[in-house]
Amino acid sequence: MENRRSFIKKSAFVLGAIGSGMACTTEAQSDNNTANLSSTQAIPTTIATWDNQEATATAMQVLQNGGSALDAVEAGAKIPEANAEDTSVGYGGLPDAKGIVTLDACIMDHLGNAGSVTFLQGIKHPISVARKVMEETNHVMLSGQGALEFALRHGFEQENLLVETSKLAWEEWKMEQKSPLIGKDNHDTIGILAMDAQGNISGACTTSGAAYKLHGRVGDSPILGAGMFVDNEVGGACATGLGELVMTTLGSFLIVELMRNGASPQQACEEAIGRIVKRYKNWVTEDKLQVGYLALNKKSEYGYYSIRKGYSVAVSQNGKNKNLDSKFAIR
Ligand code: ASP
Image (cartoon, rainbow, N blue to C red; front, side, top):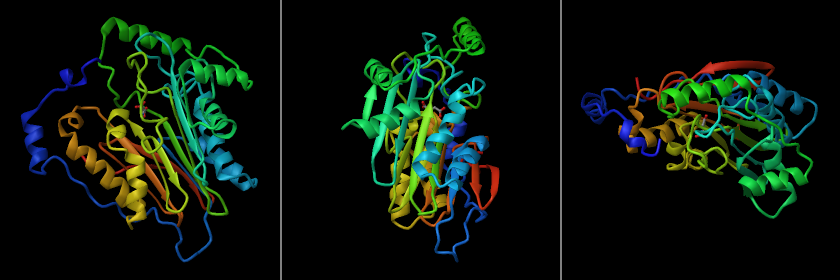
């Protein structure tokens, strides 16, 4: 864990193939994710990483009841946070190398207000603490013990978030000392965006981070511009997967800026994944390494893309709630 590069298998064949463009192809996504552009009205939309259909449906319900995009993303993010079976978010999350569940989250509204918590322990809904940071302080980010004290002062309760199954999985990991890298079985961070009927966009991102990470490690999810970013003039973006690859390319900010310069959400997600694949080609060839993005623009168009197979997004729009498999860069 201390030295990620030490266990990345270097395959001359794969690297050579990537260099020559053989193993890595980026194909344009067919335009099945385009909202009805003939309408100038905002189409209320919620979109989340992974199979988080319950979250997008809940967020859509908030919008339909007249709630704001901000209320919607918070409500949506709280669904996996409270789900003991979701091993990558909140309650039930897999712990760090010391067996402690540590949580990262951030939230951002259409006015550019933002709040974030990192390395928070024992609070089931870090997204709501992040919102409190946004609304009740002059700061954007609180961390660790300070974030916990802030949460307790604001009425959040401290509880044990390490459920028995996650504890057993950690004990097994400790025995085997398996790779803690993010793979297909241990990343389900929820990043969620919502556009309300006024056309305002907000975003939220919450996670227990990489399973068995070093104690103290913070990933991309609470970092504005990395795990999530919103600029209401343009749109928003969210990330999931190996945070180190997202933080070092500032993926969500990049996607929003690409959209500002005319890219569609799909094109922007593909470009952001392409940057990772190009710059970190000897990391991303690691069998399981994954990063997935999603994006939403002001026309209620959305896009999504990942490094490799397996990523999907949940979308609620026009009365439909669906899960869509992502196209990917490395095959
Ligand atoms: N992005 C998260 C992190 O690196 C992990 C995940 O998506 O599950 O902490």
